[in-house]
Image: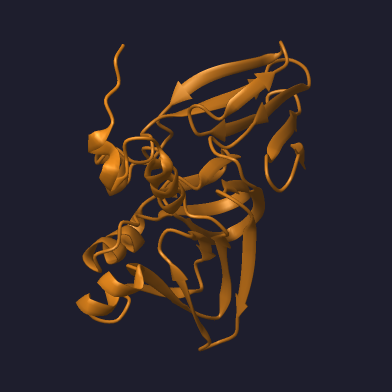
Length: 234
């Protein structure tokens, strides 16, 4: 598979060129366009694609679409549902963790499951249930906003707001916790954070979707304290 990521970083768009009989798997709703030689099949994969605890609670989809070039070379284009960037990662028999909603696409050689990582985050009180992407092949993850990379040495730690976490390598240890005590959490405007300890790489997005939607909602007519005094006749 040959690929190009265009319109970065604000409106990233993945253009994948598939050889005959080659397949790329993508999250439902990611497809933008494709050539006539591309066939589409909806699947749950050999191990129950995206079958995580979050999936059963209404998060990442249990299904995925597989795009295959039938008989000749074909092109399929994919994009995230929100404005932002796309990051490509090549697995070589290792693991990449991606948070719920960050998975965009991958080769069919990549297995996707929740493993123990999701349970660890859930028990820590975070709203994160990471997917474990294992095997060999291309993986594409999406972000709301830009993507920043943090390289951690052995024993070095870094903290990221849980809303901004995108992905991290399997060699990185991680835990979820609150910002200080309950008082600090309420007064600081911060909530849960993820603490990562190297060695390895962590990726985070520069914007948080929940924070963004809260800001939009707060600026809409009728959202303020004085909205009750406004009468609208239709």
